[in-house]
Amino acid sequence: MSPPEPPGLLPAEVEAAWLALGERATGLSGEEALERLRPSVARLSDLFTLARPAGGFPDYLADASLLAAYGLFFFPQSWARAGWALAHARFRGWAPGSARPRILDVGSGPGSCGLRLARGLGGEGELRLLDRSPSALAAAESLAAAAAPGWTAGGTVGDARDPRAWPQGPFDIVVAGFVLNELGLDEAGRDAWFEAAAAHLAPGGLLILIEPALRATAEPLRRLSDRRATLSPRRIGPELDASPCPMLGGEHWDHEVRAWEAPPSAAFLNRKLHRDLGAVRFSLALFSDAPLAPSDPAAARVVAEPQLLKGLFRLVVSAGGRLRTVEAATRGLSKREAKDLAAGFARGDLVRVPPGDDRRVEAGALVRLGP
Ligand SMILES: C[S@@+](CC[C@H](N)C(=O)[O-])C[C@H]1O[C@@H](n2cnc3c(N)ncnc32)[C@H](O)[C@@H]1O
Image 1 (cartoon, rainbow, N blue to C red):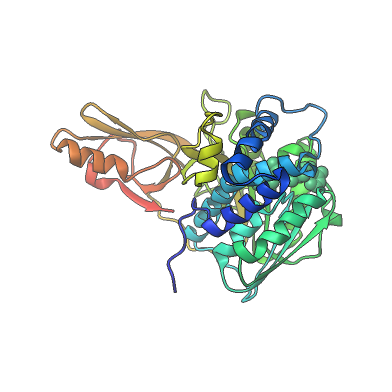
Image 2: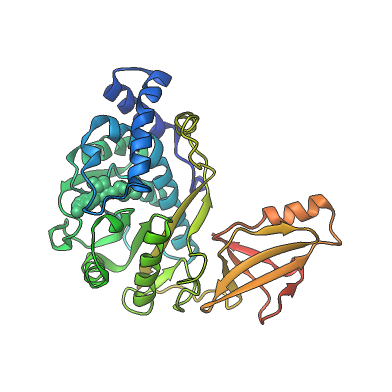
């Protein structure tokens, strides 16, 4: 069996499929097509961050140029985020219960999350996609052969707000990537939506919610995740336990910042846009009733950028509903050794730290567990 692809890596054949769509949308080829699409990327980027419309999002993927821009710049990032979500679930020991799994991608757009998950599960399976945008669904279907060979992909035009209208379950995975925040639901509406979405899961199935890393979208997801932590399906990640998020209401808010590799076309588009493509940022919540092995009692989650300072290496970790700062002296280490120590840890990692409240720990006692 070949080793799993890195979570953040978009396969070249998927990028090539998007380039072909971009060339068709612009009537240009190669870099000229990308140059023409750059303003569309900027428009989408502003829509998702600065200009978030109060009255709801328009069907921005109906426009061929905006769809191609989405595919070349945002799809690879969503792909990476879904890859990390699956890596996390795998780390917890989750696996699909059926030999030919079924995935439902709600608010799928062009299938960024569903196709990534299908590819990650490998083998054969069925991917169902639901979106209000027929052109996005058509793109997802046309990408499936390159993105998830062995899988069938079928789109349904429908309303993500109304789970009763979704394709029939049961599904091994239901995923909603960067869509919950576009549905305009209040807390009670989100809870009802969650219940109805979870009703589409097979026994032991996995519900994956991914939201933007903005405070305005990440905090509502953490609150939903806390409310649901011990209910069915229970929270299995990224937190290792059911304790409430200790960062809610604080100066900083919890979100993932994960490594990825921007495909060459995204890097080209970004030459004049100067967006931060160094990492993918998002907020994540995973739920499943699958029987999983209990996590290591000394495990904790790194919730801030690790810091290599003069004479010490610092991690801020979250476990049991508490934040803890742990510091390892690097005085006895060479510069190279200290750098190697720091390079072994990243924000979002699950790590083993010595139990107790001590701030000062031995460097050797800090162990990265995954994912
Ligand atoms: C930001 S995109 C995310 C697409 C994809 N899940 C991803 O992670 O890249 C949000 C998607 O949700 C869809 N959407 C928003 N509101 C919807 C609704 N009420 N019903 C169906 N789809 C909706 C949009 O058409 C768009 O494709």
